[in-house]
Amino acid sequence: MPGGLSFAEQLERLEAIVRRLEAEELDLDEALRLFEEGVERLRQARDRLTAAQARVKQVVADHAGNLRVEDFDP
Amino acid sequence: MGAPLDLFAGVAPEGAWTVSEVTRRARAVVEVGLPPLWVRGEISGFKAWQSGHWYFALRDRTSQIRCVMFQKDNRRLPAPPPDGMQVFVFGRPTVWEEKGELRLTVVELLSTERGGLWQLAFERAKAALAKDGLLDPARRRPLPPHPQRIAVVTSPDGAALRDIIAVARRRWPLAEVLVVPTKVQGDGAEQSVCDALALLGRIEDLDVAIVGRGGGSREDLWTFNSERIARAVAGAPVPVISAVGHETDVTLCDLVADHRAPTPSAAAEAATPDRTDVLAALSHLGARLGRGLATRAERTGQRLERTFDRLAAAVTLRLERDGHRLSAVSGRLDALSPLRILERGYSLARDADGRVLKRVAEFPPGRAFRLRVSDGEVPARVEAS
Image (cartoon, rainbow over all chains, first blue to last red; front, side):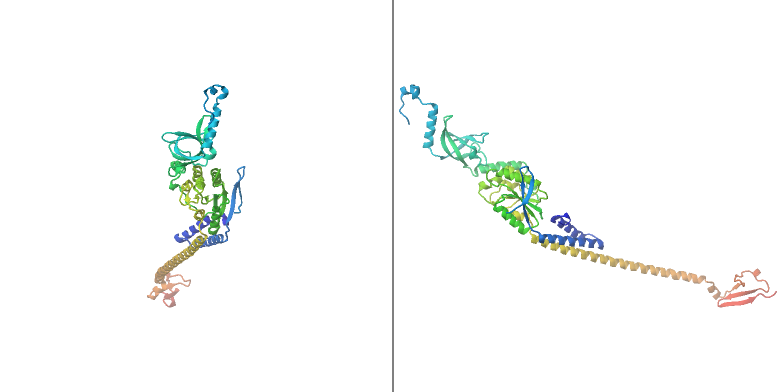
Protein backbone atom coordinates (compact mmCIF):
# COMPACT_ATOMS: atom_id res chain seq x y z
CA MET A 1 0.00 0.00 0.00
CA PRO A 2 1.72 3.25 -1.13
CA GLY A 3 2.59 5.42 1.83
CA GLY A 4 0.29 3.26 3.94
CA LEU A 5 -2.71 5.21 2.74
CA SER A 6 -6.02 3.44 2.15
CA PHE A 7 -7.67 3.93 -1.21
CA ALA A 8 -10.20 6.25 0.40
CA GLU A 9 -7.46 8.37 1.98
CA GLN A 10 -5.58 8.50 -1.29
CA LEU A 11 -8.68 9.64 -3.11
CA GLU A 12 -9.38 12.27 -0.48
CA ARG A 13 -5.84 13.63 -0.84
CA LEU A 14 -6.22 13.73 -4.61
CA GLU A 15 -9.50 15.61 -4.34
CA ALA A 16 -7.92 18.09 -1.94
CA ILE A 17 -5.09 18.70 -4.41
CA VAL A 18 -7.51 19.32 -7.26
CA ARG A 19 -9.55 21.71 -5.15
CA ARG A 20 -6.47 23.69 -4.12
CA LEU A 21 -5.22 23.84 -7.67
CA GLU A 22 -8.60 25.08 -8.83
CA ALA A 23 -9.32 27.55 -6.11
CA GLU A 24 -6.20 29.01 -4.59
CA GLU A 25 -3.75 31.65 -5.75
CA LEU A 26 -0.62 29.58 -5.92
CA ASP A 27 2.92 30.18 -7.06
CA LEU A 28 3.68 28.37 -10.25
CA ASP A 29 6.22 26.33 -8.28
CA GLU A 30 3.61 25.26 -5.74
CA ALA A 31 1.07 24.58 -8.49
CA LEU A 32 3.53 22.39 -10.33
CA ARG A 33 4.45 20.51 -7.18
CA LEU A 34 0.76 19.86 -6.43
CA PHE A 35 0.13 18.83 -10.00
CA GLU A 36 2.96 16.31 -9.90
CA GLU A 37 1.76 14.87 -6.60
CA GLY A 38 -1.75 14.69 -8.02
CA VAL A 39 -0.60 12.85 -11.12
CA GLU A 40 1.35 10.38 -9.00
CA ARG A 41 -1.60 9.73 -6.70
CA LEU A 42 -3.90 9.36 -9.65
CA ARG A 43 -1.57 6.80 -11.18
CA GLN A 44 -1.32 4.86 -7.94
CA ALA A 45 -5.08 4.88 -7.44
CA ARG A 46 -5.66 3.69 -10.98
CA ASP A 47 -3.04 0.96 -10.60
CA ARG A 48 -4.65 -0.24 -7.41
CA LEU A 49 -8.05 -0.35 -9.04
CA THR A 50 -6.93 -2.29 -12.04
CA ALA A 51 -4.55 -4.66 -10.24
CA ALA A 52 -6.75 -5.51 -7.28
CA GLN A 53 -7.86 -9.08 -6.68
CA ALA A 54 -10.58 -9.50 -4.11
CA ARG A 55 -9.49 -11.52 -1.09
CA VAL A 56 -11.90 -13.56 0.98
CA LYS A 57 -10.90 -14.56 4.49
CA GLN A 58 -12.60 -16.06 7.48
CA VAL A 59 -12.54 -14.76 11.02
CA VAL A 60 -12.46 -17.48 13.63
CA ALA A 61 -12.41 -17.16 17.39
CA ASP A 62 -10.81 -20.10 19.18
CA HIS A 63 -11.87 -21.37 22.59
CA ALA A 64 -9.51 -18.98 24.34
CA GLY A 65 -11.28 -16.12 22.56
CA ASN A 66 -8.33 -15.33 20.28
CA LEU A 67 -9.16 -14.05 16.85
CA ARG A 68 -7.64 -15.69 13.81
CA VAL A 69 -8.00 -14.73 10.17
CA GLU A 70 -7.76 -17.70 7.83
CA ASP A 71 -8.14 -18.16 4.13
CA PHE A 72 -11.68 -18.90 3.19
CA ASP A 73 -12.67 -21.31 0.49
CA PRO A 74 -16.31 -20.82 -0.36
CA MET B 1 -65.75 -50.48 32.95
CA GLY B 2 -65.24 -53.06 35.67
CA ALA B 3 -67.85 -54.99 37.61
CA PRO B 4 -71.18 -53.54 38.82
CA LEU B 5 -70.82 -51.87 42.21
CA ASP B 6 -70.99 -54.41 44.95
CA LEU B 7 -71.49 -52.52 48.23
CA PHE B 8 -70.39 -55.45 50.28
CA ALA B 9 -67.36 -56.14 48.21
CA GLY B 10 -66.46 -52.46 48.57
CA VAL B 11 -66.17 -52.84 52.33
CA ALA B 12 -63.49 -55.47 52.08
CA PRO B 13 -60.11 -53.77 51.64
CA GLU B 14 -59.19 -56.06 48.87
CA GLY B 15 -62.45 -55.18 47.05
CA ALA B 16 -61.84 -51.35 46.93
CA TRP B 17 -59.70 -49.59 44.28
CA THR B 18 -56.82 -47.50 45.37
CA VAL B 19 -56.64 -43.87 44.20
CA SER B 20 -53.67 -44.71 42.06
CA GLU B 21 -55.56 -47.56 40.43
CA VAL B 22 -58.40 -45.23 39.54
CA THR B 23 -56.24 -42.43 38.16
CA ARG B 24 -54.10 -44.90 36.24
CA ARG B 25 -57.21 -46.50 34.81
CA ALA B 26 -58.75 -43.12 34.05
CA ARG B 27 -55.61 -42.05 32.30
CA ALA B 28 -55.64 -45.20 30.16
CA VAL B 29 -59.27 -44.66 29.31
CA VAL B 30 -58.75 -41.01 28.36
CA GLU B 31 -55.63 -41.65 26.34
CA VAL B 32 -57.25 -44.46 24.39
CA GLY B 33 -60.64 -42.78 24.05
CA LEU B 34 -59.43 -39.30 23.05
CA PRO B 35 -56.75 -39.20 20.37
CA PRO B 36 -54.46 -36.15 20.02
CA LEU B 37 -56.69 -33.29 18.88
CA TRP B 38 -56.99 -29.59 18.17
CA VAL B 39 -58.77 -27.63 20.87
CA ARG B 40 -59.86 -24.05 20.67
CA GLY B 41 -60.13 -21.76 23.68
CA GLU B 42 -58.90 -18.80 25.66
CA ILE B 43 -55.64 -18.75 27.62
CA SER B 44 -56.12 -18.33 31.35
CA GLY B 45 -53.84 -18.43 34.39
CA PHE B 46 -50.69 -18.69 32.31
CA LYS B 47 -47.51 -19.48 34.25
CA ALA B 48 -44.03 -20.20 32.93
CA TRP B 49 -41.96 -22.27 35.32
CA GLN B 50 -38.24 -22.09 35.98
CA SER B 51 -37.89 -25.37 34.11
CA GLY B 52 -39.19 -23.60 31.00
CA HIS B 53 -42.46 -25.56 31.00
CA TRP B 54 -45.66 -23.59 30.54
CA TYR B 55 -48.81 -24.21 32.59
CA PHE B 56 -52.16 -22.67 31.79
CA ALA B 57 -55.83 -23.38 31.41
CA LEU B 58 -57.83 -23.29 28.24
CA ARG B 59 -61.37 -22.22 28.75
CA ASP B 60 -64.59 -21.22 27.11
CA ARG B 61 -67.82 -19.83 28.63
CA THR B 62 -68.58 -22.81 30.76
CA SER B 63 -65.59 -25.10 31.07
CA GLN B 64 -61.88 -25.27 31.37
CA ILE B 65 -59.11 -27.77 30.94
CA ARG B 66 -55.63 -27.69 32.43
CA CYS B 67 -52.80 -27.63 29.94
CA VAL B 68 -49.04 -28.10 30.02
CA MET B 69 -46.64 -27.25 27.22
CA PHE B 70 -43.17 -28.59 27.82
CA GLN B 71 -40.04 -26.58 27.15
CA LYS B 72 -38.99 -28.82 24.27
CA ASP B 73 -42.24 -27.89 22.51
CA ASN B 74 -42.65 -24.24 23.52
CA ARG B 75 -39.11 -23.12 22.72
CA ARG B 76 -40.02 -22.85 19.05
CA LEU B 77 -42.55 -20.15 19.91
CA PRO B 78 -41.42 -16.52 19.86
CA ALA B 79 -43.28 -15.47 23.02
CA PRO B 80 -45.52 -16.85 25.73
CA PRO B 81 -49.23 -16.25 25.09
CA PRO B 82 -50.83 -13.61 27.28
CA ASP B 83 -53.95 -14.41 29.32
CA GLY B 84 -57.08 -13.79 27.31
CA MET B 85 -55.52 -14.69 23.97
CA GLN B 86 -57.63 -16.88 21.74
CA VAL B 87 -55.63 -19.89 20.64
CA PHE B 88 -55.71 -23.24 18.94
CA VAL B 89 -53.71 -25.92 20.64
CA PHE B 90 -52.86 -29.37 19.44
CA GLY B 91 -52.47 -31.73 22.34
CA ARG B 92 -52.89 -35.13 23.84
CA PRO B 93 -55.62 -35.43 26.51
CA THR B 94 -54.43 -37.31 29.55
CA VAL B 95 -55.03 -37.56 33.23
CA TRP B 96 -52.52 -36.06 35.57
CA GLU B 97 -52.48 -38.79 38.08
CA GLU B 98 -50.89 -36.82 40.93
CA LYS B 99 -53.80 -34.40 40.97
CA GLY B 100 -56.42 -36.57 39.38
CA GLU B 101 -56.91 -33.88 36.80
CA LEU B 102 -57.81 -34.07 33.18
CA ARG B 103 -55.00 -32.42 31.32
CA LEU B 104 -53.92 -31.55 27.82
CA THR B 105 -50.26 -32.02 26.90
CA VAL B 106 -49.90 -29.32 24.29
CA VAL B 107 -47.34 -29.73 21.53
CA GLU B 108 -48.41 -26.87 19.31
CA LEU B 109 -50.03 -23.52 19.99
CA LEU B 110 -51.34 -21.05 17.43
CA SER B 111 -52.93 -17.72 18.05
CA THR B 112 -56.16 -17.07 16.19
CA GLU B 113 -55.37 -13.38 16.27
CA ARG B 114 -53.77 -11.76 13.26
CA GLY B 115 -50.02 -12.24 13.34
CA GLY B 116 -50.39 -14.23 16.51
CA LEU B 117 -47.52 -14.77 18.88
CA TRP B 118 -44.97 -13.76 16.29
CA GLN B 119 -46.53 -10.38 15.90
CA LEU B 120 -46.87 -10.04 19.63
CA ALA B 121 -43.22 -10.84 20.26
CA PHE B 122 -42.17 -8.57 17.42
CA GLU B 123 -44.18 -5.64 18.71
CA ARG B 124 -42.93 -6.11 22.26
CA ALA B 125 -39.28 -6.14 21.20
CA LYS B 126 -39.81 -3.28 18.78
CA ALA B 127 -41.35 -1.16 21.51
CA ALA B 128 -38.40 -1.90 23.77
CA LEU B 129 -35.94 -0.88 21.04
CA ALA B 130 -37.91 2.26 20.24
CA LYS B 131 -37.94 3.19 23.91
CA ASP B 132 -34.13 3.16 23.87
CA GLY B 133 -34.08 5.29 20.72
CA LEU B 134 -32.56 2.52 18.62
CA LEU B 135 -35.11 2.90 15.81
CA ASP B 136 -34.43 6.61 15.33
CA PRO B 137 -33.51 7.16 11.65
CA ALA B 138 -31.05 9.85 12.76
CA ARG B 139 -28.94 7.08 14.29
CA ARG B 140 -28.23 5.61 10.87
CA ARG B 141 -24.63 6.00 9.84
CA PRO B 142 -23.64 6.63 6.24
CA LEU B 143 -21.89 3.76 4.47
CA PRO B 144 -18.22 4.33 3.60
CA PRO B 145 -17.92 4.98 -0.16
CA HIS B 146 -14.65 3.07 -0.66
CA PRO B 147 -14.44 0.29 1.92
CA GLN B 148 -11.25 -1.63 2.52
CA ARG B 149 -12.57 -4.38 4.76
CA ILE B 150 -16.10 -5.75 4.68
CA ALA B 151 -17.24 -8.24 7.30
CA VAL B 152 -20.04 -10.64 6.42
CA VAL B 153 -21.90 -12.19 9.32
CA THR B 154 -23.76 -15.14 7.86
CA SER B 155 -23.78 -18.89 7.39
CA PRO B 156 -20.49 -19.99 5.81
CA ASP B 157 -22.21 -22.37 3.43
CA GLY B 158 -25.30 -20.43 2.43
CA ALA B 159 -26.16 -19.03 -0.99
CA ALA B 160 -26.23 -15.58 0.62
CA LEU B 161 -22.48 -15.63 1.20
CA ARG B 162 -21.72 -16.84 -2.32
CA ASP B 163 -23.84 -14.00 -3.75
CA ILE B 164 -22.16 -11.38 -1.59
CA ILE B 165 -18.65 -12.57 -2.49
CA ALA B 166 -19.47 -12.66 -6.21
CA VAL B 167 -20.87 -9.12 -6.21
CA ALA B 168 -18.05 -7.68 -4.10
CA ARG B 169 -15.41 -9.34 -6.33
CA ARG B 170 -16.96 -7.96 -9.46
CA ARG B 171 -17.63 -4.43 -8.26
CA TRP B 172 -14.89 -3.63 -5.78
CA PRO B 173 -11.95 -6.05 -5.76
CA LEU B 174 -9.99 -3.63 -3.56
CA ALA B 175 -11.99 -4.79 -0.59
CA GLU B 176 -11.15 -7.72 1.59
CA VAL B 177 -14.21 -9.76 2.47
CA LEU B 178 -14.03 -11.21 5.96
CA VAL B 179 -16.50 -13.97 6.63
CA VAL B 180 -17.64 -14.18 10.25
CA PRO B 181 -19.40 -17.55 10.29
CA THR B 182 -22.57 -18.02 12.30
CA LYS B 183 -25.66 -20.15 12.51
CA VAL B 184 -28.59 -18.25 11.05
CA GLN B 185 -31.50 -20.46 12.05
CA GLY B 186 -32.53 -23.12 14.51
CA ASP B 187 -31.36 -23.77 18.05
CA GLY B 188 -28.53 -21.54 19.18
CA ALA B 189 -28.74 -19.24 16.16
CA GLU B 190 -29.52 -16.17 18.24
CA GLN B 191 -26.48 -16.68 20.46
CA SER B 192 -24.31 -17.51 17.48
CA VAL B 193 -25.26 -14.30 15.63
CA CYS B 194 -24.70 -12.24 18.80
CA ASP B 195 -21.25 -13.82 19.27
CA ALA B 196 -20.36 -13.11 15.65
CA LEU B 197 -21.48 -9.49 15.95
CA ALA B 198 -19.40 -9.11 19.10
CA LEU B 199 -16.30 -10.06 17.08
CA LEU B 200 -16.75 -7.06 14.75
CA GLY B 201 -15.26 -4.67 17.26
CA ARG B 202 -12.07 -6.70 17.35
CA ILE B 203 -11.40 -6.68 13.60
CA GLU B 204 -8.88 -3.98 12.67
CA ASP B 205 -9.58 -1.44 9.93
CA LEU B 206 -13.09 -2.72 9.40
CA ASP B 207 -15.24 -0.32 7.35
CA VAL B 208 -18.65 -1.93 7.12
CA ALA B 209 -20.50 -5.14 7.98
CA ILE B 210 -23.24 -7.11 6.27
CA VAL B 211 -25.51 -9.25 8.45
CA GLY B 212 -27.94 -11.59 6.85
CA ARG B 213 -29.11 -14.75 5.24
CA GLY B 214 -31.00 -15.86 2.18
CA GLY B 215 -34.76 -16.08 2.05
CA GLY B 216 -36.67 -18.57 4.12
CA SER B 217 -39.92 -19.17 5.90
CA ARG B 218 -41.11 -16.75 8.50
CA GLU B 219 -39.90 -19.08 11.22
CA ASP B 220 -36.50 -19.39 9.52
CA LEU B 221 -36.10 -15.63 9.53
CA TRP B 222 -37.29 -15.34 13.09
CA THR B 223 -33.79 -15.34 14.52
CA PHE B 224 -33.36 -11.85 13.06
CA ASN B 225 -36.30 -10.59 15.07
CA SER B 226 -34.38 -11.24 18.24
CA GLU B 227 -34.14 -8.18 20.43
CA ARG B 228 -30.65 -9.25 21.50
CA ILE B 229 -29.45 -9.40 17.91
CA ALA B 230 -31.06 -6.05 17.18
CA ARG B 231 -29.22 -4.49 20.10
CA ALA B 232 -25.95 -6.06 19.00
CA VAL B 233 -26.45 -4.63 15.50
CA ALA B 234 -27.20 -1.18 16.93
CA GLY B 235 -24.04 -1.39 19.03
CA ALA B 236 -21.77 -2.48 16.17
CA PRO B 237 -18.65 -0.31 15.79
CA VAL B 238 -19.10 0.09 12.03
CA PRO B 239 -22.19 0.72 9.86
CA VAL B 240 -24.24 -2.45 9.40
CA ILE B 241 -26.20 -3.47 6.32
CA SER B 242 -29.02 -5.88 7.11
CA ALA B 243 -29.98 -8.36 4.43
CA VAL B 244 -32.38 -10.87 5.83
CA GLY B 245 -33.66 -11.87 2.47
CA HIS B 246 -37.33 -11.12 2.67
CA GLU B 247 -38.94 -8.36 0.69
CA THR B 248 -42.17 -8.20 2.61
CA ASP B 249 -41.41 -8.85 6.24
CA VAL B 250 -39.19 -6.31 7.91
CA THR B 251 -37.17 -7.81 10.74
CA LEU B 252 -35.95 -6.00 13.84
CA CYS B 253 -32.43 -6.46 12.51
CA ASP B 254 -33.49 -4.48 9.42
CA LEU B 255 -35.02 -1.75 11.56
CA VAL B 256 -31.93 -1.03 13.64
CA ALA B 257 -29.38 -1.50 10.85
CA ASP B 258 -27.80 1.52 9.19
CA HIS B 259 -28.97 0.29 5.82
CA ARG B 260 -31.51 -2.32 4.78
CA ALA B 261 -31.05 -4.39 1.65
CA PRO B 262 -33.75 -6.65 0.21
CA THR B 263 -31.28 -9.40 -0.74
CA PRO B 264 -27.68 -10.39 0.06
CA SER B 265 -26.61 -9.29 -3.45
CA ALA B 266 -28.21 -5.89 -2.90
CA ALA B 267 -26.36 -5.65 0.41
CA ALA B 268 -23.03 -6.25 -1.34
CA GLU B 269 -23.94 -3.59 -3.89
CA ALA B 270 -24.76 -1.11 -1.15
CA ALA B 271 -21.46 -1.89 0.56
CA THR B 272 -19.27 -1.33 -2.50
CA PRO B 273 -18.80 1.22 -5.26
CA ASP B 274 -18.51 -0.01 -8.83
CA ARG B 275 -14.88 -0.06 -9.95
CA THR B 276 -15.88 1.30 -13.38
CA ASP B 277 -17.55 4.32 -11.78
CA VAL B 278 -14.53 5.00 -9.60
CA LEU B 279 -12.19 4.77 -12.61
CA ALA B 280 -14.40 7.28 -14.41
CA ALA B 281 -14.31 9.55 -11.37
CA LEU B 282 -10.51 9.26 -11.33
CA SER B 283 -10.34 10.29 -15.00
CA HIS B 284 -12.50 13.26 -14.20
CA LEU B 285 -10.17 14.22 -11.35
CA GLY B 286 -7.23 13.83 -13.71
CA ALA B 287 -8.83 16.23 -16.18
CA ARG B 288 -9.51 18.74 -13.43
CA LEU B 289 -5.92 18.40 -12.27
CA GLY B 290 -4.67 19.23 -15.77
CA ARG B 291 -7.06 22.14 -16.18
CA GLY B 292 -6.19 23.38 -12.72
CA LEU B 293 -2.52 23.53 -13.55
CA ALA B 294 -3.16 25.14 -16.96
CA THR B 295 -5.31 27.84 -15.39
CA ARG B 296 -2.72 28.37 -12.71
CA ALA B 297 0.07 28.63 -15.30
CA GLU B 298 -1.96 31.01 -17.45
CA ARG B 299 -2.73 33.20 -14.48
CA THR B 300 0.93 33.19 -13.49
CA GLY B 301 1.85 34.06 -17.09
CA GLN B 302 -0.58 36.94 -17.08
CA ARG B 303 0.74 38.09 -13.76
CA LEU B 304 4.27 37.83 -15.08
CA GLU B 305 3.33 39.84 -18.15
CA ARG B 306 1.66 42.46 -16.04
CA THR B 307 4.71 42.55 -13.81
CA PHE B 308 6.98 42.91 -16.81
CA ASP B 309 4.89 45.72 -18.24
CA ARG B 310 4.96 47.56 -14.96
CA LEU B 311 8.67 47.02 -14.64
CA ALA B 312 9.29 48.31 -18.14
CA ALA B 313 7.07 51.32 -17.52
CA ALA B 314 8.89 52.06 -14.29
CA VAL B 315 12.30 51.82 -15.95
CA THR B 316 11.24 54.10 -18.82
CA LEU B 317 9.78 56.62 -16.45
CA ARG B 318 12.94 56.56 -14.39
CA LEU B 319 15.10 56.94 -17.45
CA GLU B 320 13.08 59.85 -18.69
CA ARG B 321 13.13 61.58 -15.36
CA ASP B 322 16.85 60.98 -14.99
CA GLY B 323 17.36 62.27 -18.53
CA HIS B 324 15.69 65.58 -17.68
CA ARG B 325 17.74 65.92 -14.55
CA LEU B 326 20.93 65.16 -16.45
CA SER B 327 20.37 67.84 -19.08
CA ALA B 328 19.40 70.35 -16.39
CA VAL B 329 22.60 69.65 -14.51
CA SER B 330 24.75 69.79 -17.60
CA GLY B 331 23.06 73.09 -18.53
CA ARG B 332 23.93 74.47 -15.14
CA LEU B 333 27.49 73.15 -15.41
CA ASP B 334 27.80 74.75 -18.78
CA ALA B 335 26.58 78.13 -17.54
CA LEU B 336 29.22 78.05 -14.81
CA SER B 337 32.07 77.31 -17.17
CA PRO B 338 34.57 80.27 -17.17
CA LEU B 339 35.04 79.80 -20.86
CA ARG B 340 31.43 80.86 -21.40
CA ILE B 341 32.18 84.05 -19.46
CA LEU B 342 35.22 84.76 -21.56
CA GLU B 343 32.99 84.34 -24.61
CA ARG B 344 30.99 87.26 -23.40
CA GLY B 345 34.12 89.45 -23.68
CA TYR B 346 35.79 88.97 -20.32
CA SER B 347 39.40 87.88 -20.09
CA LEU B 348 41.57 86.35 -17.40
CA ALA B 349 45.05 87.47 -16.38
CA ARG B 350 47.39 84.87 -14.88
CA ASP B 351 51.07 84.95 -13.93
CA ALA B 352 53.66 82.53 -15.27
CA ASP B 353 52.59 79.97 -12.64
CA GLY B 354 48.95 80.20 -13.70
CA ARG B 355 47.77 82.16 -10.64
CA VAL B 356 44.92 84.50 -11.43
CA LEU B 357 45.84 88.15 -11.02
CA LYS B 358 42.89 90.04 -9.55
CA ARG B 359 44.24 93.35 -8.05
CA VAL B 360 46.10 96.45 -9.32
CA ALA B 361 48.87 95.71 -6.81
CA GLU B 362 49.54 92.51 -8.62
CA PHE B 363 50.47 94.45 -11.74
CA PRO B 364 53.78 96.27 -10.98
CA PRO B 365 55.27 98.13 -13.94
CA GLY B 366 57.14 95.89 -16.36
CA ARG B 367 55.45 92.65 -15.07
CA ALA B 368 54.92 90.00 -17.71
CA PHE B 369 51.70 87.97 -17.55
CA ARG B 370 49.43 85.91 -19.75
CA LEU B 371 45.96 86.91 -20.78
CA ARG B 372 43.36 84.21 -21.33
CA VAL B 373 40.70 85.17 -23.79
CA SER B 374 37.88 83.06 -25.20
CA ASP B 375 39.90 81.46 -27.97
CA GLY B 376 43.44 81.37 -26.53
CA GLU B 377 46.22 83.07 -24.59
CA VAL B 378 48.04 86.29 -25.28
CA PRO B 379 51.50 87.12 -23.69
CA ALA B 380 51.37 90.61 -22.16
CA ARG B 381 53.47 93.10 -20.02
CA VAL B 382 52.57 96.06 -17.78
CA GLU B 383 54.10 99.31 -19.19
CA ALA B 384 57.08 100.69 -17.36
CA SER B 385 55.60 103.68 -15.40
